[in-house]
Structure formats: structure tokens, C-alpha cells
Amino acid sequence: MQTTRRDFLRSAAFAGAACAFPSIIPSSVLGASAPSNRLNIAQIGCGRIGLTMDVPGFLAAKGAQLVAACDLDSRRLEYMRGVIAKHYSYKTSSIIAARDFHELLSRKDIDAVSISTPDHWHAQIAVEAAFAGKDVYMQKPASLTIREGRCFADAIKETGRTFLLGSQQRSWGHFHDACAFVREGRIGKVLRIEVGLPGDPAGGSTKEMPVPKCLDYDFWLGSTPEVYYTEDRVHSQNAKIAKALNSRPGWLRCEQFGAGMITGWGSHHLDIVHWAMNWEKIGPKFIEGKGNFHTGGLWDVHGEYDITLVYPDGTPVRVWNKFPNGVRFIGEKGWIFVSRGGAKISKSDPVAAGKPLKALDASNPDLIKGRPAAPLYKNAIRDCSKHHQNFIDSIKAGVPSIVPAETAHRSCSACLLSWIGMKLGRKLEWDWKAERFVNDAQADSMLERTERAPYGAKRAYERLSGKKA
Image (cartoon, rainbow, N blue to C red):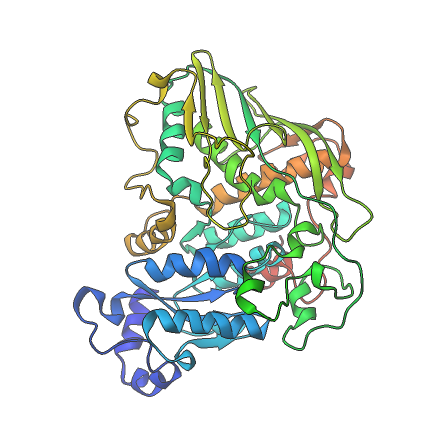
């Protein structure tokens, strides 16, 4: 793919096509940083996470440049174009703009995409990008359902594209060390694991409102059911665009578009559990839980909850909103606790009330002394602000990223299984190899959702792969 693009860049045809983004490549850039050695990335989704995490991450990364932006809200799109252009000292018009992501996937001069959309769009865009020959960076959670998660993971595998999930905790040194300490046996046999995650509040206005002229609302709904527009269902339309972009969007609290904090934060912490326990390609065997789902307002995701996942080796993982926000591994020789401490990656990240948690703690300081005997990932960056650099480095080296597609799918699946467990409130048995429940048609029916035509990850996968999903 890279050779093809570089040949294209050097060709005479490119001289005429260059007017599409005339200021993207400064004439002063030479040598190892020459345009032909830099990956062109398109930012799809120009909201809060795109603005505060993914665009800054790629602007700071070496060996890449953001050349395009895409969003279904024209105000957000223009604002993001300006942010990118300002960084490079270009005119805003030099940054390619698209309302429909398909326009960017069809371009030969774009190598990779960064997907920072609402959750219900993640898997479909990843599937289509992979089959379009683009490498894929994607925000977590990996999918809205387990079935569409399988579609995106298979699409990445079948096309051979590089994939990285935005699970930045893997690029945070103390998370890496905690997982490695557990794997090398510092706490002995792991007896149980405790995962603390926040919940979401009730609320949200149900008042029907006219669709803003700047928003393609039908496209925004995607594969989910057609429902009336109200601002608390989508994102802020505050006249001050910078303030609107930095506020937590309402869709995060609507089950139509996601599962709430169990996937929002669960994707981070259960990924750490899987990494430490070497469960990255499997899943739990039993799921049992309960949850309180909000009623009365617009927002209907879970509030309080208590779930236990039991993995094939018998180790129980309890996920409970009353545990401290983080992961505690409890073994025969003591415990290790890892969290973000008092740090926030984005302004809206929840932190524990009172005294900040220690980012890395243990029942005995010797359990976390020094560095692990061997790293879990070669050349790990150990800086969460540089997580995006791993994507660029992996593409160029032709090696798996620190969070490849199958790993991303399995950690998200554990979250979605927890959600199903909360919904049904009874013990479930899961066949992680077949990705089906054991003798439970009702639970199996919750592995996917009906896709509203013409949208959907399953529909896209079947169309582009020629296979039945």
C-alpha cells in the first residue's frame, strides 16, 4: 500500500492533483521527513475526543500528517480544519473536508484513518476503511455489539491492515509494569480481580427540537432506529463552539448508541485485566450481574451495577461501581492495584473523591519495585500522550500494534457480556470460541441489533467481503 502511494506521489499525475491540498506539504521538508515518507491521515469525527485526544496525538506524532477532517456537523468540521491548519501554519482550505467518510476512503492519497465518532459508528467505518486499503486507528469501545465487533476484527485480519485501539492505558508505563508484574508471578497465583468503574447519571431532556441546519441527523443516527432529534441525544450546539466541543455529549448516556460506562471505561480496565492475565484472545466462561438502568428521562444507560465474570481457568473478576476506579489483582502473595491516580486524559474523566488514589500501589512495596524482568510489548512507549505514535511505528515496521484488532474485540466483548448480564440478571454461560451463549436463545438475541438500512457494520462486511457475517 505504501509503495503504491509513494509511486503515486512521485508521478506526473500527482503534480496536477496536488491542488487538492496545495499547502499540506511544505517545500522545505526533505530527507527522512519528506512527504513520501509521511503517512497521510484523515480524522473522522471532530467532537470532544477527536479534539482533545486524537488530533493532538497525531499532530505530535512523527512520520505522519493530518490532511483531512470529516464530520456530519459542519460547525465541528470547520473548527477542526482550523485547528489542524493552525498547527501546520496552513490555510484552513488546505485541509480536505468531507461530510461523508466514504469520500476520504476513496482517495488514494490518504493512507490511514483516525475514527473518533460516537460508538455506534466505530465498527462500520473500521470495516469499510480496512476494505478500502486504509490502516485504522479507532477509539474505544471497539463496537456496539459483539457481532459487529467480530465483523470489524475479521475485516482487519482479512485485509492485513494495521489497527490500533485508543486504549491509552497500555502506553502508560505504570499500567504496563503492573500487568508485567502480575504475569511474572510477583503476587503468586491470582485468586481474584476487582475492577472499579464509575456509573452514569439519570437525566436528559426529552423535548423534541428541530434538527440544526449544520447537522446531517439521519446519517448521524446510522444503523440505529430513527428517532426525533433533541440536543441531549446528540451533542451540544452551544454557540461557543470550543465550549460545545469540550462538553460531555448526551449520546454517551443513551443505550441506542452505546452501553454506558461498562464499555466507556470498562474497555480500558478490562483490557488491562486481559493483558495482565494473558486473556487477550479468549473471554469469560460465566457472567452474572445486576444493574440499575435509568428511567424517566432521556438517558437510559446503567447507573449502579455489580457483575462477576469467571474466566476459563476459574479466576473471578468482579466489576463493581463501589470499588475504587482502577484494577486490583489479588494473589497468594499480596495485591497490586493500578489506576490513573488523580490524572485525567480528558477534562470530563471521573476521578475518585477525596484523597487521590496512587497510580500504582501494592500490599508490599517490594511487589512493585523496579522494572519487570521482560516487557509485555517490545519498544513500548510508556507515555500515554504518545499512544498514537505506536500506530505510525507499527504501520512502518509492519508489526502488530500494542492493541491489535482481535485484542480490542475481546476486551469490548467482555464489557458487552457484562451489559447483557446486567440486563438479564441471571447466570449466563459463554462459549468464547463460538462466541455464543450455551443453550440460551434469549441471551444470544442480544449479541446483535437490527441494522437500519443502508447502514451497519454487518451489512458493510457482507457487501465488501462477499461472506456471510
